[in-house]
Length: 223
Image (tube, rainbow, N blue to C red):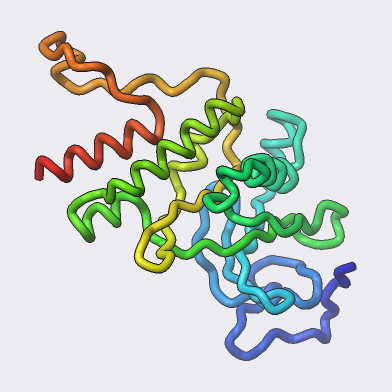
């Protein structure tokens, strides 16, 4: 059971002060640095129970919007989508580990603790090396195929912000952003300019993130 910080509790010298950040957090969560902020939440790197984790602190406007739009608690909604994908054995390695939601009882700021994923984007990897490794494209195919076989919605949104983590001598995509509300329509197939104007008879490429990855790989090959 987490206990709330009292006014007498003080962070370590190098840590951020939760009060300064506008947060009320349970004792034991040390804010190390602010990673970034967007429309729905601010993300911090934190230290908790011997681990370095990501803490997503949701903005009140986003909390209200999710409650009105889909009648969901945004933090629980994201955690459950995270768990759904991670529960698939073929996707576990490519999905950040969900830890817990805090603040759903109103005694602390509404936040989601999750495995901290450090890495680079697929575009940054392409710029760095001038190509996309073939094994990485095969990994993307596994993610896309598994999602289709198990009717997992939202994979294109989840993979849009995935980071590539270095593992030994290879790169591994890891999904960590599960706030998106999955649509019911499948992603349209990728069509080249010549296909769109009717001058190419080549088969249409896959849609969604896999099509985007393939298009990037082909562009890098041409360049």
